[in-house]
Image (cartoon, rainbow, N blue to C red; front, side, top):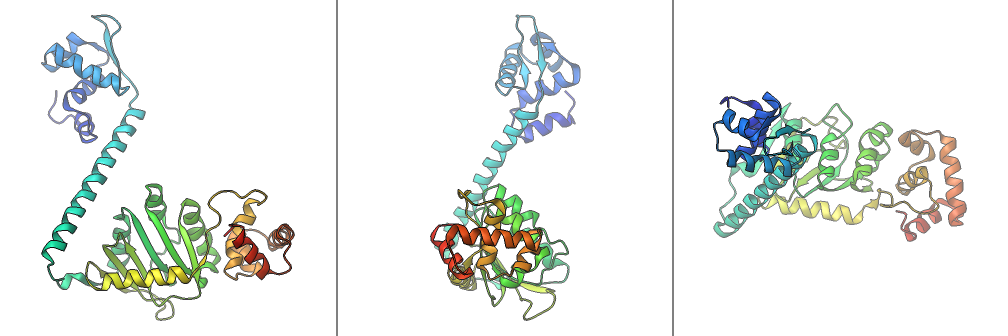
Length: 328
């Protein structure tokens, strides 16, 4: 077995035990072989090779011999490697969580004072990179007060969508100006809501804040203060962090719902489900049409149908009845 066998090393990295990885790598390199031939090729005991073949068969990576002198055939690794990857990721997540909990216990017991690194000023090109790195490190929850301006030239947020897929909870309070930006709504807000984001909307926020796992936060200025964000604060564990969390919680409680119903509501069409949260923010028909990428006439027809469904005489009455029905 070559010492630099890439397949063997990568299978071990996925969590497969070394004997099974050696046997599978050998089979892929040489083709089907009997237990005896594999033992000779690998300079191993036949009993050890047989055990490795059994382990591969349990992972659906090899077809065991049907006769004592029959050949072992390697199988498609697609499903098995995905299972190994998922198991490895779960193990790594557990390891990260245990490490952080142990350090938190140490920090609480020792009560060391926060050093100058507790609050760091980040500027220039490093700012967006630091924001992305912090968001990618999220394990449990991200809370955010969101408002223009936006530092990234890309409107979409693939990091959040990826985090939501791995069960990171997102709570985001948007300003009305963000929601009324049709391009931003279509490219960023709508896909994140569809992926599971919990969203609310409010008229304005004092600062842009993103808190990750109650262990770090980024603070930026809003468009009311600057046209472009070129610097921000990275806040780690110190007395400022709980204050930022309390700031978010206060705005979250005051904000109105933006996310639509989590499950399909009988009688509501898909466009109507997307339209209701926008109307609740006070968006006009024209803004709703741009944000949802449909014609204004489609919005008008949907509004008329919603008014009929709820027997409402005004938009305000529609919003009240939609909220009572659990549509918002």
